[in-house]
Image 1 (tube, one colour):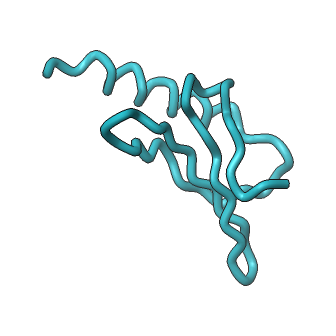
Image 2 (image 1 turned 45 degrees about the horizontal axis):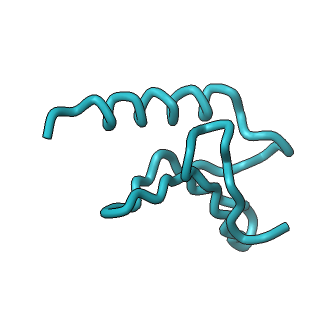
Length: 70
């Protein structure tokens, strides 16, 4: 599996970065914008699938960010 992979389930331009530590595998969910990298969540992944609550919280953060004025 690549170190980073697309996560269209979260949103357009969203990806998951895998970081293997000595005893845990970390995941960083992020979105690449033309002018920024938005870090949506960082968590220790313990199962094969990304937990639904993580996906939903990332979608909510993106909605809030995209609806901010300015």
